[in-house]
Image (cartoon, rainbow, N blue to C red; front, side, top):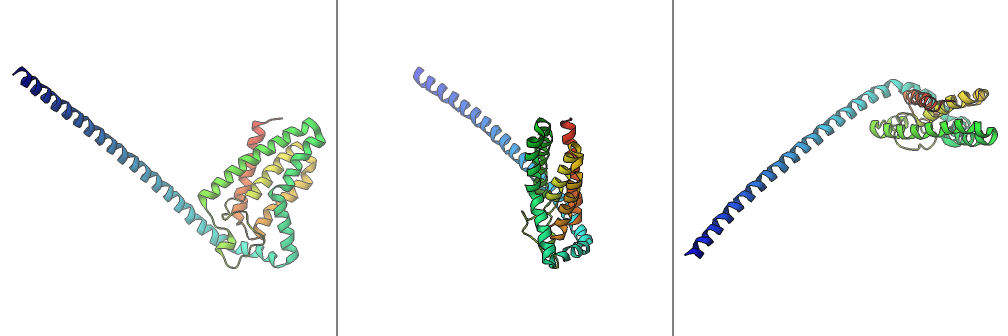
Length: 232
């Protein structure tokens, strides 16, 4: 009899234990499901916010493209002349790094230790500018003029698909400010060259004027920030 009672007691305790476990599991499952729904809602809300931002940028760019089309078309006509097209293509290629890399290497060689700071400033501003303009291009995805308009022809091969802002102009303005801050005597060389680089991007059908203006503004900000971080 004692054995039977003990068995029944064990059986009843097991049932109670099983009920408690199932109850806890249910609460856990409910908690997990609730958290998953909350996470899903956050993801959906974030995605919708990003989509709204992208659509606003796309709408703004479509309006700007229509306004700037005539100026792009007029400047791009220079590409019909082979000599003009080749000239601006060379300027654009030099402005993509060769000209500025040469100056970075020459400053320490010619000016010793005093040339290290200007070169270091250019390196920092260049890396920061590269990261920023690539991020902006990937987010804003403005198509280049020669892609949007059949009347605009590409005078040279672009580095990537999107145009806003102009990376060439960003670096040209940034480096020119930094060079002239340390070596004012080189202004006669850098300022006209930077201006030609900026013009080349529109003449070659690769950028809108607003791309160039935005790149120049960002480049100037980068240069001033770098000089503030690394004073003489």
